Length: 480
Image (cartoon, rainbow, N blue to C red; front, side, top):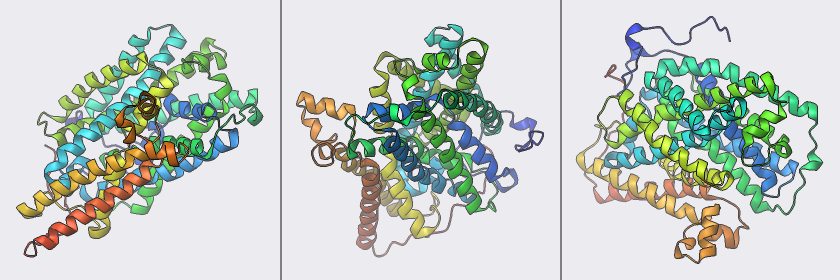
């Protein structure tokens, strides 16, 4: 990529982006699929992805099994965001703008769940950003976390244009930092025999697969937010592969690096261990700075989407103000993560906050397979709008509940140990029938699709005089 080229047009009036959920007008469309792929690649260059690779040996898996789970989880997980991003250029709207046509009056539920997931991703990464600055410069972790929020909030509040610029440069800096770490790890020697299985089962393999799947798949509900400015003529094939490869290549690299360096990264402070691995001094400090920038790049993407998602809940403030407000709740959640055992907290938050994305993708798939486009919010009768509202809300809630017994989390195990009746809901099938395997994501996708399809079909047959038009949502407006 030629760094002298400016992929995002310089427009003084757009120093701050004010567009919310409304469609982006055709004359404001710009950018290429490659730029979207760079954004997704940069967003995955984070220590939290490296940390996922360390989980394999902790689950008792050997090197080969852990690597296979990492590759399989990401190859499958990246399909979600790669598929959903295709609706951005076609409609010109972010996820929550399209959700109004799919879910009707229950769009607020989608927005709330999506915002909580985005905030969870911000908090998971910010912990490592604080650790990186503490390891390199002795900065208190709380101060380091605050700096993460100040940087990513500034980028996400300015909006789409600044976000793409920042991600482009962070991709270069982050890649250089992690390439340096990779060279050091290889130089020290990767000994697969040192990562020997100590009791890992096929259930443990599927659990690691589910966790790596969730890290990639959890971006699905954000994907159209970063492709909606692309021209409607953008190649769907090119955009799919740019997004898919951007996420997959970065995640597999980061998580495999964590696996290869697992024996060096034991302990509660992974960044301090990584700093020591780099030999400390100036070289280690520069790598920590690259880690910090990567964390800010990841968090900026999640926070930008969280602002749009809260607008879908019903908040009518301008997008920059909503985006800035997201940082407050994210900061509080980050402080919670710091106070607990990071391994358990990390996996619990990642899994529990993204299981709902399965039913959401199931609903989305049903609508898009039938229509090849999301219905416009105004393109339906009142009865059809109410039908979507009920069907969408029930598919999300029931799909999530159906998936939970197939989950495998430490929170569910703790409920079972305590004898709580909620243990039946949280992981009971996984514990008793699946040897601890986590199949919540595929079950959630299937359940969401079946429930939504059945409810919509029932509603249509009960109202034979009501017909919905299926014209696609066309971008007719400009910036708000």
